Length: 464
Image (cartoon, rainbow, N blue to C red):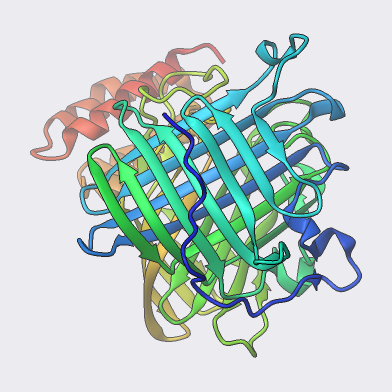
């Protein structure tokens, strides 16, 4: 596949910003354009962008995401990766592509590394096996950077060997927002690192072209976001003694039709029965220019269903077991925001071949905020892969409720304390003699529950 040149569409939106831009007064970490570039004093830098797109002539709906991840464990080892994905929101399909530059293959003398990232401004490139992906800041006719205005070129090959290509001009219309707003000012505990740095940016205008297999479309969109983190230590285990699965998280960006963009973090300590860890909360940005972003920490999420990890997608690191379940449909609420939203996936089981289990894809959100109905597009990301017996009984309970298997629900509640207390033999007997026959007797929805029963039985059969 040849490397395309960046798009050169006419300016989509005149930039309302100027460089240098000081996001957090007095904090050099958040001075732009340098904050958009790589941070040599940190060992991990992550650039993320995602959005919803519509075919200009066909009206067909798509979404996309991309990740550029630079890792320098110990400051010298190169362990980078790049991911892109396209989603067809009309038929629920998706394509995903990831390429790595990892030891030991890249440690030979004379190796040319795949990723390039500039210091002082945004200029990213990744020479993947599909071609060169790029995310670069635009410049005017005099060569000066245009504040918060970007060219994006993404290339990949999906699971069905179909070529994917996306070229976009991206122009945010809102200023960046530090995660945690004025409460945390972009510095928060993330993945067991006491202080990481993060901001996001929304209100984007996106125009360009999308090609995927035999589909070629001019596309545009306004629901999208940029997300940035940089970490003093490697993001995948730098704060946990090298265990990349020690801390899991859920992260969402939701674009509501009342002009509010809600960015939600939830973190869990896998070493402590998934206990919540800080920072868990929401940062809310508003379209109204005179309304300051706010941070709330009373976010609650009730998972209504789970989805099994598709074994056709293999993450880089060996999985602990084959059967893993990820959170899916859910209710998100905050009393402070007077917010309650129902989140429904637009694409089933959007797994990506990242280092550990990682699902991310488009969601539809609908509910109320401050007493008024709202709805909107969002991206939901999660790495909380559940496979231990006491986790799978929760998966089973949520699934029976979601599938309205009312005759099975009380049986699962009887089973739960047996599993949680470690009474494995008793739990296995009850599963085989009581729960399985009840599930088998269901007239509908039995197949999904049977799979969970099989996985739970296997987990209970493994010596602790």
